[in-house]
Image 1 (cartoon, rainbow, N blue to C red):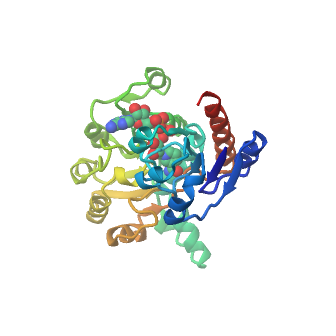
Image 2: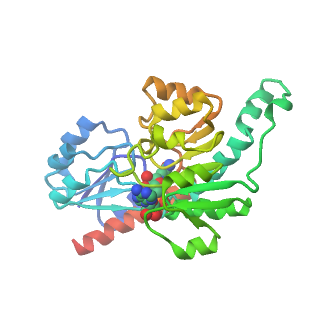
Length: 308
Ligand code: NAD
């Protein structure tokens, strides 16, 4: 069985696959055109989020039996086309839960205590003590939109900072609600109206595309903060830039954007705003998550071939 790893994955994945008898090619910079030409020779394609597994790629993969996504979101894979071609899709949903939750905590802290800006100023030889007066997480309301693995892990950590948790999700996890003394509300509108800070953890699906549009953003508390470490397309970036410019929102932290890297003028403008923190989709970029993801994808592929 021939495996093509098209995005950078920890070496544990290819070594485990080779040990199990797979022939593995690693090409982390492969372009969409090169991938379309090469895929016909492979049984398995492994990607992270860089490579978009489009209908075109899937139809060119005449031998393709399995697509492995190292990570949670499978929105970069045309699932319908894969299903129609009877290609199985496997992912590694647990790998990034802690990594993303810890990044979100860092973002929450930097939004209220601008460590990044104070550090930049001190490095310039300035000592601007008054400029960097912040606020506290203690006693504030955190709205969690999407209370799955990552949403719950963020809520657990926020609880340790003595925050109150409001939750909006289409599915209820009663045990976690109880454990975190969280309150479930019926609409996303209610979460944003009542929260000091909102963190988004829903998957990208047709129902969540631009869920945070200008209407929802206008319902936020004045001066509230928004964090998005889910998918860029869940937020209408143009509307977000307007809400930040008008002062409706006091700040935002974004690990994901509609275009990565940003290209549209409003995205570039957003990335430059001093009250906006932008990171280049680094949610899962910890040593630990990469190791867990590599082992999990190799095991998932090996197990899948036992049943295929
Ligand atoms: P999960 O499946 O455990 O949780 C998602 C939750 O969203 C579920 O509880 C689901 O019921 C809820 N949900 C789905 N549709 C909804 C809707 N319309 N309204 C409200 N709630 C809805 O997934 P997870 O592991 O917590 O990951 C969440 C997302 O985070 C992933 O889909 C992925 O897009 C993103 N992610 C980003 C990074 C990063 O690097 N920034 C890393 C990992 C995951």
